[in-house]
Image (cartoon, rainbow, N blue to C red; front, side, top):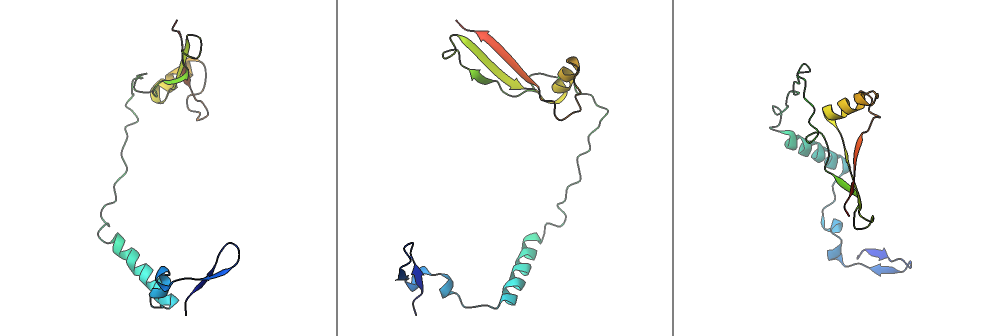
Length: 126
């Protein structure tokens, strides 16, 4: 017998046997399917037992000097001078040792993850 499907209007339509790939496979019991999936995952992990890497050891004693060019994002245009009457506004965010130093300069706690520092640059390009 041909499988029957219903369309969006609720009308039944015969479906060609070639379009149903599940009908072409022989039926398997559920227990056999579970055992196949367990065996196949073991094959993926085979040979990967020794590939676990040790964590990277970081020396906390080393102090990294702040470098604003290395510790900041790329400049993003907030206002283009063509559209702002000659005024250009760009922004970038600070991270790492530069963020910590700048946060200390303005009296904020650099260890707080809630502290986000942006650097704004205003230029008159007329």
